[in-house]
Length: 204
Ligand code: AMP
Image (cartoon, rainbow, N blue to C red; front, side, top):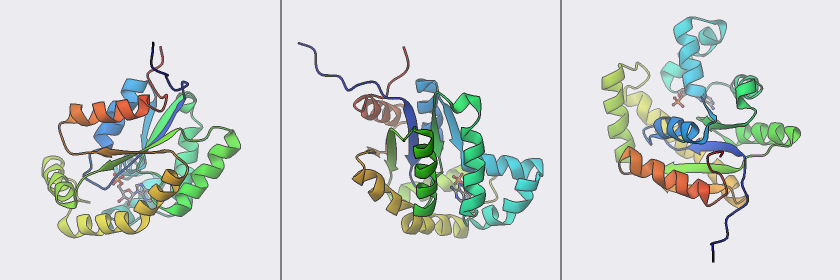
């Protein structure tokens, strides 16, 4: 007898976790494995700052302080990106939504499209692990937005503003809580099996 398999689901995913949880790296791995696009709002903003675009000029000082860009501006960036053809077959958002207001905007927009989220991955790591990983990345990449003060600011914003969205997704039965401590491959495997259990798997 074969085990019951969940019906195949489109991959419209979020990955949520504190800075240093590995969500950026895991997000790209999962998106590659599923053949969907990974969209990181942090990457979009950093690229805009680097390119010196209008968007970059608007967000530079906010990002450098580790504060949040306005909900309206961030949502406009995400909505534009989700309208590109490469997001039609599925997407994984990393770093958005960051608070309840953004979660509401996203849910309304996806409901309008008739394409609700299929799963939300929460990547959990203890605070000490986050801090150690961020400090290491800052050294390796020379990121100017990763000073000790800015890291502490971003972690407390996460706890205060972002963590509450997880309860909402949990209430909707969408949340997969994943232990983010371990090797890159071990964590990717955990995420892929949690997604498979929800019917989200690479397209044949
Ligand atoms: P991240 O790489 O996700 O840590 O994002 C880097 C920075 O970009 C954050 O500290 C914020 O300043 C900004 N940012 C990224 N995503 C968002 C978002 N959803 N809402 C507001 N600001 C954001």
